[in-house]
Length: 290
Image (tube, rainbow, N blue to C red; front, side, top):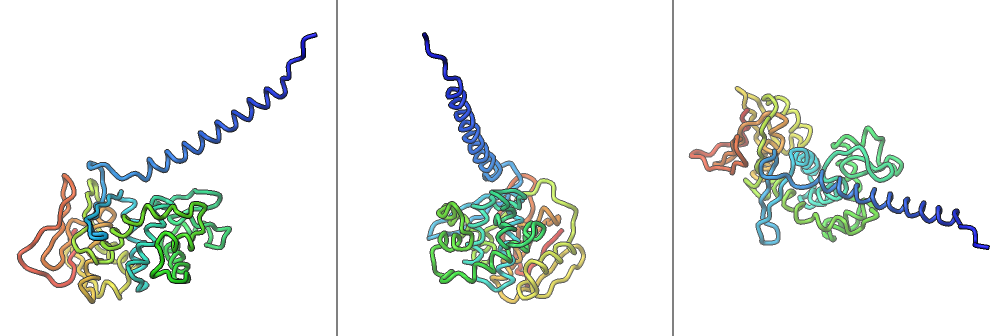
């Protein structure tokens, strides 16, 4: 007599194969989605471009408007706290890896936000972590407790803060993070430009409040708004450049048309990424036009 077919084992094999295919497809989809949403913008899209010298070579980074605005807050909090550019670099490298410098409300398990911090691990409530100011502050709180964070390998220091399942994941973002950190902390003057095709309405008072919240008076110095122009008097040239870059990076949000510092001016252009241009007469402080 012919043996009876073993349908149970066959169905089990098909089922396992189906689960494996679904799991693999989910992993591929997640990777594709992250790559697609965190990719650098094309030359025609709204974006910011940073060009700075890293390890003796000129390096260029492109960010979406969303990434630039988030990076501005992350670096701004470091400046407000009096932390060195290295702290900002570590934070940016971390946010690159964890979220693509996007304030996302999803992640692995209960991870959320710029740094994919987990409420269940004591980082704060969901509402708190989704606030970029809070999440950046909590990151720096943890960073400064890491032994030798100012001299250790950037990837390893970031991993010590995050305890990620991908411990080498931050390394590939270090060069970009160093360029962004150098520019936004004022160490690389005139290195940041943006293209905003549809900026918001002019809001000099809003930008003043933003700078006060993000950088603090110790960085901005005295600020005033006169005739649709925001003027700031930072205490030193490097910090003046940090304020100027904030104006450019947040230009779409507050309707910034120009930023002038020393004998250089950035002017919003309709057709691309404008370079900083020399002007005839140097000014004192930072002047942001709307």
